[in-house]
Image 1 (tube, protein in one colour):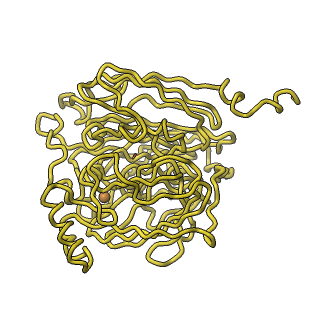
Image 2 (cartoon, protein in one colour):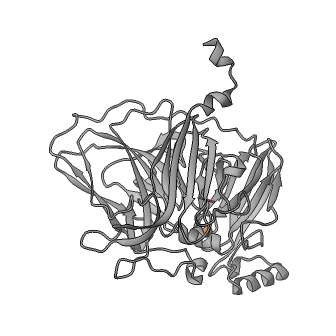
Image 3 (cartoon, rainbow, N blue to C red):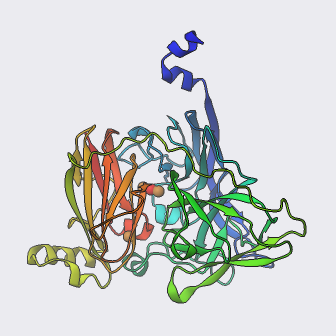
Amino acid sequence: MALTAALPLTSVLASNVREYHISAAPGRAALAGKGQPDTSVWCFNGTMPGPEMRVRQGERLRVKVTNQLKEETTVHWHGLRVPNAMDGVPHLTQKPIAPGETFTYEFDVPDAGTYWYHPHQRGFEQVGRGLYGPLIIEEREPVTVDRDIVWVLDDWRLLKDAQISDDFGNLHDISHNGRLGNTVTINGRDPDALHVRTGERIRLRLINAANARIFGLNFASHNPKIIALDGQPVVPFEPSNGMVVLGPAMRVDIILDMTEKPGERFIVTDNFYKRLKYRLVEIVYGPEPLRNAVPDTPIALTANALPEPDLKSATRHEIRFNGGMMGGMMMGSDPDSRKNMMKMMREGKVWFINGVAASGHVMDPLITLTKGRSYLLDMQNDTAWHHPMHLHGHVFRVVSRNGSPTPRREWQDTVLMAPRERVEIAFVADNPGSWMFHCHILEHMAGGMMGVIRVA
Ligand code: C2O
Ligand code: CU
């Protein structure tokens, strides 16, 4: 006992390495449903989504990635606090993986929760064609449930022959709300039903892998309780109007108690876009109850050990988002910066962070932070569109919206901003390196909505 306790932590962890090998290549998936042809996709290991990786909190993950595409790629571990060199951002943190080559990622996983992995090279097409997979970091003390289910949600733009429309990165999608599709899938297929039993308790891990679609799920007469946002535990709560909202790249873990009677059926709907409500999937109760009532065991998760920002000493940075269609009115009154933005928009650079539209992953940092200090980003969305803003390498607290403190001060790695909304986030810049800060509507990102935050 005394002997192992004296070992340096890293070597104890290093002995517990979980290894995966994934290969990015063309494949096929039954996206369009029964009676329809399969769809050509790009995917990892021939499955869509890619293989689910499961690691215990505190273990080390090693993933060999082989590129069998005809173009370069990388893999980013969305939401995980990894060392900068393992972050998977082409040219900024690594040389992209060339066709035929293999790159090995290896890092410790500090935080439990629901995460996902996806390329960061031409994401609007590589992720859009199906390259991604779930990454689950299991808690040391998980909550007790009957089933732990992962739903990776995606949205596809399919043509009549069930093939993917290849109009990736067109200027209309870039300048509006991104590539919205016409076919929604759960775990890469047209969902038929979720079969459940009365009295059952399910932990449902939702991952939004869509390029652009925001989901607002409603579970009919069931009352989902949110226990984690972006993998990070929250004090369990029921979302307002029962609607579980996920912007692109966001994750929500819910506890779904099956409180209805055997033999009954319910429809899960997506109500996010007001006039575009549709049925996602059916909940079907089996004839036999599992038990008479749902369990009343605790559902709160233990928080991850995240560094707590000190708001009193935090340095404030203002960040302004401009651009997009119907954004001309909101570009500020400085004639030179207006003129510059209008000129860039004509060249396909449509979105601006503090007046700058990115044209690649390598650029001058938007801001440079000092390692170990607390920061508050005061973000103003001066556009007519939603933006899920994602910061790499860190997890931040969402501290206010439109000047009002948030009731939960939730930890997130991606925060959904409504049109014209102002959101303040706070974090400790404890992870040195150059980190992407970008909109996760992948067409907005391609249209310039990305920047680098450097921690020195
Ligand atoms: Cu999910 Cu910069 O990525
Ligand atoms: Cu955006």
